[in-house]
Image (cartoon, rainbow, N blue to C red):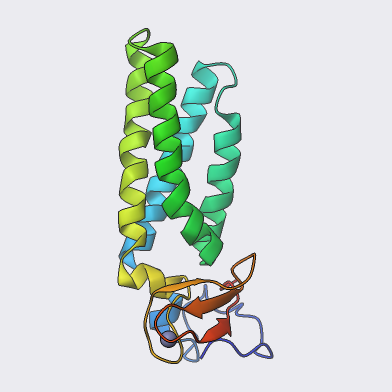
Length: 172
Ligand SMILES: [Zn+2]
């Protein structure tokens, strides 16, 4: 329903006065909003961590910023990364702290423990049905929300239930 490539740009989405935009499609669902807020907090904490360790973690900030942008735009690639990368980073950071920093700096351990806890809530939030709909994972044929990428950048999706393939563009 939103896949018409000839539709005019959705410049009026942010004004909230357009009647032609489906509100269920344009309004960010609460789990995604929570994910965006948590990601913003994580980036802030990563910034503190980077400043406190003179440069370590700068790569994580870049990755997190890219994912945050994708989450706001409703890009399925960000949805996928937002589910996988938090768990990966949490494991790596935890292992790194245990091996290198073990109890050396309670401040750093505290700063790192908060994002780890936040990270682990993200895959849960992104698994909600409303989150999956926001990221365009709802099959236009059978309405099942379990889809996987059928192209490298996730612009095409394949329904896990009926194998229907469709293309989807980010919201803006
Ligand atoms: Zn389907």
